[in-house]
Length: 207
Image 1 (cartoon, helix red, strand yellow):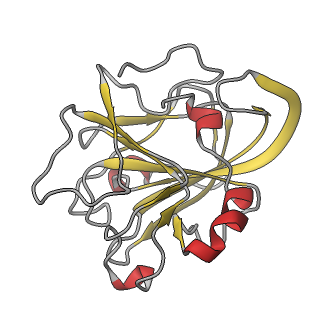
Image 2 (image 1 turned 30 degrees about the horizontal axis):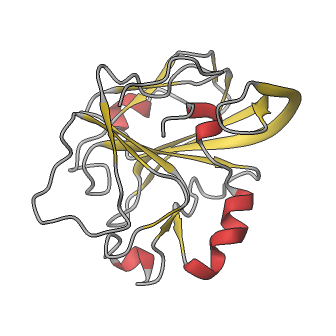
């Protein structure tokens, strides 16, 4: 699949070639790798058997962000203008590792793949699994423009232990302590989908 260039905002990760859309609803064979260097992990997806560390308590396995996979060091771009809200490291095993949260007041599309509606909305975006070196320059309040490089993807040794990717998550309330629950328990799914809208509203209709 190729990246759709007809989107409202700048691509968060520029895929330099085709990409693979994961289906994590079924366990993958040990050692399986995506057939392309670039990949997408879906929003609102039940992922049994993936989240095995103590952080998830054995019950949180419903993904409420969007994963954009690429080689370590790949730039993460600002989809639009905004300000830095928080720069932190979530260092629990299986967590986000280096994390950047941005703050925006912009019009969002009403539906994925549509142009912005014209009414400004206040929201925050969490970017997880980054490299610390790439985000250590930022301090809260720093401004940036659409297309500016915000960060780079971290390697497994610092990104929480995951194959290189960025977890993108929208929030309609200010995140606390530089963190958001990227996966939730099944009984919390509907509330989470309201609190954390589909990141494809800013990343485009990638699937």
